[in-house]
Image (tube, rainbow, N blue to C red; front, top):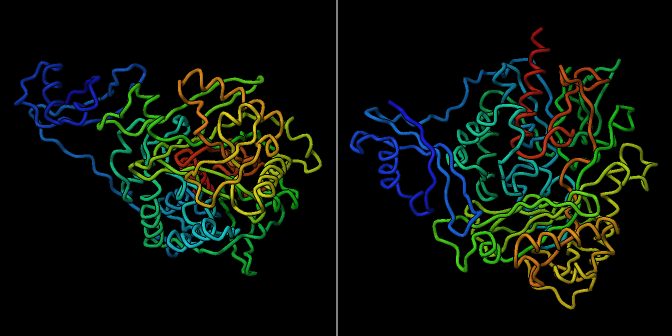
Length: 519
């Protein structure tokens, strides 16, 4: 017999299997010797009070052998000689679209402008050490997309869009830890993701898919409002009647290609702001109401949403025990993001603090039509580059100085490896964003006592929160509303906001593409 219960226990008890078995026996009124195994189904932290608790959903196997859930690959078909579909972009949307195509007996031709995960590391090192940005291989572009080297957070609110568990199972089958199936806010870690991405690549190739790196798409070939294929930077043309476009939120050249060809795209609201770094010990003390974090608790995170200047201002992509990374995708711009290793055991934490933007905010760039939001981003990123000395150093300001509009005399060493430059960030950000953030930080400080310290450092900008463009598609077939056979997909098309939601959208587009081909 199997039985499920929910309990709340201390962090120490939550890690003690024998203690959990005794609690399960008492709560279920079953002799402990009759329980063969107690499995943790779900785990979350309740840190609302000084006495921190762990919420657990448990399943007990009573007089029944425990059978561990197997995380196996689907019954993929050999697709070497099957109908081909082009998938542009090897981020989560593109990779999971490719896997789903194989499952449906279709051969994916996966085109990635950047390099494989191993080769990509050299280009990341060049940004850090030499301030050199490779436009095709960086933190945003390359195998695995932006998620590979920016943390691997798997939490999503998009559970109605598709089967989240199926994505998690596939990640586990390719090497992710089984805890991502249990934790309320699952996370893989930047140090673990490259190996998982490599395993996914090997699966795609093993079953007949083709992956081409260093293959930037420079044109989408269209005839009679239907796709015919693509042209690559080296002049090579690849033919196909179906294209899944999964290029991510920073592929500005793809947006420009579509716009110039008269293919309908739309400006989309997004959020923009800064990335602030605190010591992890301070965040632990604030969130866990303690001087020293309990050894059984993970490094603390925070999630805050406020309203300021009649706009939403909120934390974004919070990275406990992590670092701030340079995420520019072209020379002459500065962009920040954050990531954590799997253990989240570094001494600093960081989070994007961003402001909601509306289409009216892009009015100064209305001449660019649907690319107005892109130009809004560019203007701030390029200004940051100039003000920080035309390198990958980031404009920075101490947090209390930021609130008071005061240039910081010096900047403490932060986790941002290329370095910082003391800049009054009101000269980087539009005035309305700056003022909204100043008031928002004050509200954060009222909610989290100790947060407003001048030892915290604000880095600007955090500008790539989501795509500034939406590529409209039909609700039923997911094809572009104008172009037959073109499937806009994932974050870059405006239909996802993270690894899981992008992977789900990639699968959905692959299913619709498969159905059309089999008619």
